[in-house]
Image (tube, rainbow, N blue to C red; front, side, top):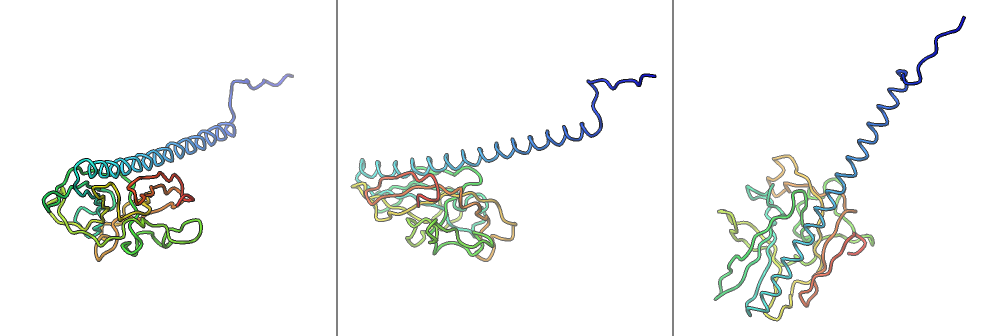
Amino acid sequence: MMRPCRSNAAFTLLELIVVIGLVAGLTLMIAGGVAGGGRTAALQSAQASVANLLTTARLQAMATGNTMRVLVQQDSAHPLAAERYLRVLTLEELRAGVWETRQVIALPAGVHLLPHQNQAPANLFGAAGPWLKVDGSVLHSSALFRPPVNRAVDSPLAENWAELWFSPLGTTPTAGFIVLGLGRPEPPAAGAGGLSPIGLHNPDAAVGLQLTSYGLTLFINDRAGF
């Protein structure tokens, strides 16, 4: 007596489980790739925006004969720090002894400038400690070394800002590195007591710029370039 044959089109329970597992794995891989691409695109966009703002400051200083500066919000205690800290930048012109705001930009969500190592809150880098260059030294925005400026810009409350200067000759006394990295919000209470409202992560994804003493900006596309 012949036994009935199983149709080739049918699937056993084990085969279905295997297929579902493969689909789930591929979905995770694709999602991870898309998310990674989005983060890379955001960093590149921020890098280009900062370079454009610095170049604009230099060219306007040379064209007008007035000193220009770019400010970087670095006030972790400001009520809007979760949205503005190390993300908002402004271009200002010195006219008749008064600084006048010319442009304000915000970096893409999740992208932040690293402060100078002397201005970094204790919890900015999490439990891993400071970010490091490939040679073991501290990775930070060495160009942001000047004392902070307290000023109200695009906000009713004054904030502390790091500053980069450009002379009418297009040169700058604030040459150095500017580092951009990925960050995520810390718990709401973290902004109190001088702590950071965001936490930086993944130093291997860091990009940035080198600002020369001639006011030129050079792109740095990986951590090994700093």
